Image (cartoon, rainbow, N blue to C red; front, top):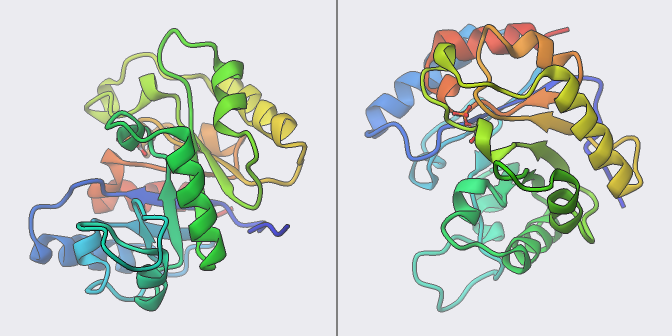
Length: 234
Ligand code: PGA
């Protein structure tokens, strides 16, 4: 069993299905790269698959991965293909993929294949509004080890304009959730990060209780993302 333990805070930008062109992706990437020069945080950018081979100079993560190495799986991308491009991280089990029908069994297979290939896995977990958090986390974390866990309560994701968010979990709630995740995994040292409408204004308070952040919307604005990284450079 091994961990990607580090004193540094981790900031992972999840671009989702954005931006619309390679040119924009390159511009955003370069602006982020310039803006975070000298930052002490660990930064990972997760662009769409198609841009992974084009963006150079910051650690990259994929937003998903398949569980086989090669073969007749139209449209899928394997962990070894990602490794070959120099991709270091992969998001597995993001709620937007679970919403499209990805089951816990599928998530577990992807996680295992990615770990076997030597990718660093960021496993996304979190309850839907109204669900029992502990039950959901226990189910989503069954048999899990050797990963970074992103706690992303589904109700807090993409609430729109980062400054007009609906009620987000308080740092206290995020801390309780991170503690619960560590308890379920029986591991005090697992890195837990938080995602769900994080922005330059709220990054600092969340970073006091977790090991990093997973901004989505805010990672598409270079200035905003750079400010988040500055807050994480402690
Ligand atoms: P958000 O996305 O910051 O736009 O809420 C976070 C995520 O889905 O990982």
